[in-house]
Length: 359
Ligand code: F6R
Image (tube, rainbow, N blue to C red):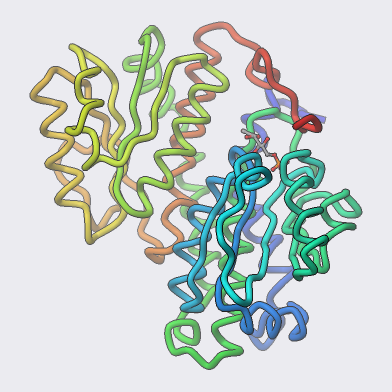
């Protein structure tokens, strides 16, 4: 029931702080240890490479997962679009381990890959929101998101739930291996900070609505740009906007723009620059200047520590591996309000189904 909310999408955006808290409750013990079976952690840690397989928004959660797993476990990690992997798999390492990210647990493209993985005799883990779903039953292990049902077709809380659970899992793996980076990563504390930051952001919806009205309500196209983890966020932000507002949107690596795509920038083209990664902040800012000089309407979404005078959306500071959890919230809201202003059914965008059970 969506209660007083006009659409499930808005309700589910607002539920994200609660999803963070629910994950902490389910996965963190009183003494701070992570409640994930040691047997699963050992199998993951024995792998020489992790293969994350997913589709759509879950694939984008996988892109962030790569940063998290490599950062906290030091295990090389690849992320694959399921429909590509199914018919054109990469050469595998000696000891692969497969992680399926899937909100519904029913996506046909991901199921196709899991049945290959089972034929090959490799172990797997499904991270899903739906207990007893097909991908959960057919994988060796399952971890649940406990995010509550996601009804809006556009995925919001499942994306942030998947990233938070990846962080809990990577922390547990790294701690089992005795890695200092993982030991120093206080995951429950960090996710609590995220939950509070998300709350601040959803409380400031009116400001995001104004930006959507001014910059996106009538535009033909839009860009989200960033580097490193901010490029991962840009891709998800772009998918959100295009699927509910039908604005042609690209999520782009900001340094790559000048190699061709910058030709599309016209007067007033909205370009949202995402800047949470300290290593690349300066570079994304200079790419934003390049599009500004060609007439773009640049909107900055920036972590507080990196913010400058005039940045429109400033994010509370959190651990560098968790910034997507905050940066995506204003992007979800921009998509929501743009769809609303254009008069669309936000929860049921055209041509889309909640769970895609055909290949
Ligand atoms: C976009 C969206 C889709 C799904 C994709 C995979 O908002 O919801 O891109 O993420 O179809 O679905 P799951 O996660 O159920 O495997």
